[in-house]
Length: 394
Image (tube, rainbow, N blue to C red; front, side, top):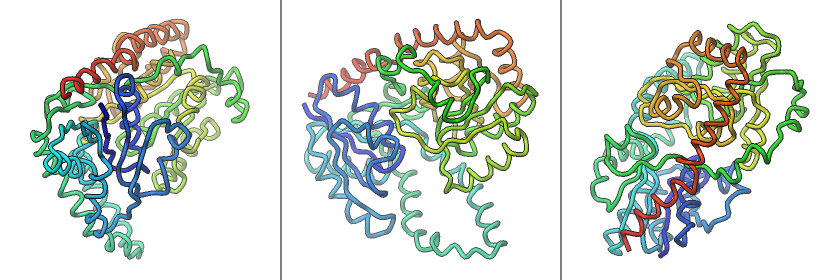
């Protein structure tokens, strides 16, 4: 049986979830990923890791692209269609295939898209007000406004059409309660992500970080709701010269990057390092150089339905881990790492201080976290559950 996964943008980070699902489904089925490509090729971090069949339709964020939805539908020629996210350029082509070709359709929902939209409205209004005050015209925004309006409106509509599918998978319990279906966490290839296979010493030398320095790392695509500012504030409270904060995954073209840099420079002086977006294959080596991994999500409408995959990266690599009690993180990490209240630099600082004051205990928790990850959140553990869902659709 062949499964066609439709991703909403092969050039965006949403293909990361599609990739995880594809790798697990390949245990029993032929799999391909198709979808629009709004950028120049496959999303950068996965560009050198794509070892599955993929086909894309080059598109622009303009109204004329809406007429090409059927091209995406034609690419999805599998026996079963698996769409990632209830979005215009994935779910709608999937519905076209379902009703025109009478094929089974399964949807995967890994974020609450409506929550993202509602949470971003306030931020965008503030940004436009600021831009207007600075004399910025926003011509590009006005040019794209009709496309963006349709895309956003479609999210609220398509989320209400999930019942038309033949199966649902989600990435966390909030989404299961909202949409139903089976929880498929962001599983990890724990045979590849094995701490015995990687040494972060090389990257430490590249960054001029002493072996005696203690590295606290955030790894991911920073956004205002991910709590990176809280982490910077917490690090500033720990007046230890041996502590170094490394933020990995920043885009220097993003205004938010400049905001974080200014904050870190003011609070931490020379005790921080920024690294740009990194290829997927470097993740284990990057994590290997860290002493502690932190996932400091804020509690907001955006994060209610989001579970950061980096939690499982840290667990797979047996690293001491601190997370905030948001989404399913508290339940999954409790006992295997440290769970603190969100939006609290003091709580985060206390957890980091305890870890470094009791580091042998922290290492032992990291070791047990890896065992837990292998047992419950590895490809070998989650893959058969996902494959059984599709086997029932033969």
